[in-house]
Image 1 (cartoon, rainbow, N blue to C red):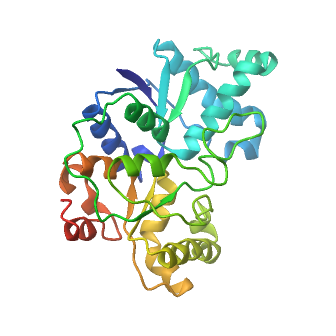
Image 2: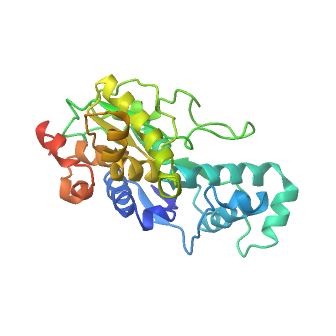
Length: 291
């Protein structure tokens, strides 16, 4: 099957391995991701600071481009990009006035009718349709992850149907359980990692990350799994400093969900580029004989 694909800015920069992993693992599942042509930034959280129109128009442009391909569904791995695009699609469908104002500025008008899916939604659909059957050759035995959704994947305005429970989402747990891991329940799954405040207010970000790491350690986890490129970058790159701030002795690999899927399907650390993590991601997998 073919899906439209919007990588977004992070996946073409600081989280480029997430982009490459997404293409690799989806191909193994029989899904061809077709990157939409000439895509642009979704605006993330910044566009809304300028105006509501900008916050809707920027993702609407990409929706129009995706709809012009004739495909019925778009996969968006980045939590922020997914959130902004889903919100825009809902407004485009329901608000004829804003749809008209936005489309007056676009070469490819956007209707908001294309299905906007996170990587978790696509993986759960593939599990339901049996695409994983016979492909899991390295069940993730011994892996005790805490699933970290971050603050954008499940939180939406009231008029936007949330894809999972806002406070206690379970989609990532279902995916990892299907791969043979034993996800651990914890309190910090939807907490904020500090996002870009890691740059402009580092002490606050370290405090937020330290709280997350402290909870993971208290629960007996041996890794953290996420779908958000900003969350992964922060907890991976700033882990030592955040752990020291919170008095946390453990260090946790911070994996993308795509890495877990790739490992379970027998892909190597080199193929998945896990050796590029700043907090060691290879050692635990070798210890558990998963790579």
